[in-house]
Image (cartoon, rainbow, N blue to C red; front, side):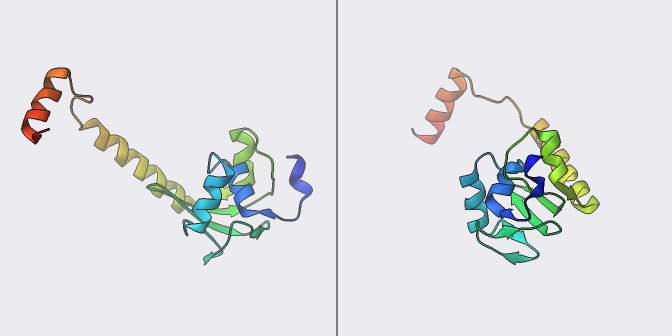
Length: 128
């Protein structure tokens, strides 16, 4: 992490570098939408983040509660990105349970994509 010497970095840039969001603009939209909180407060994407800050991140059905361990404005590989933060144990177990529940519910879905015959029956039934 070459930017480890930085004392502060923008929140949206750090979220992108830590690989929580695919683009910096998606990270900024999440912060603006209130899905990211810093130290229990709603902030703007340009908020200067510092080591020791506590973040609450909602992305879809998942939630992370993390503490910032290092700062970087450069996007690197996933193993290096994981070194930027430390996730709480409660957050990790809750997130893993949500992932397992989603996988279990996906197993109960039948069929998948309808066949041509099924699609015709659906159109007849819905009147389309």
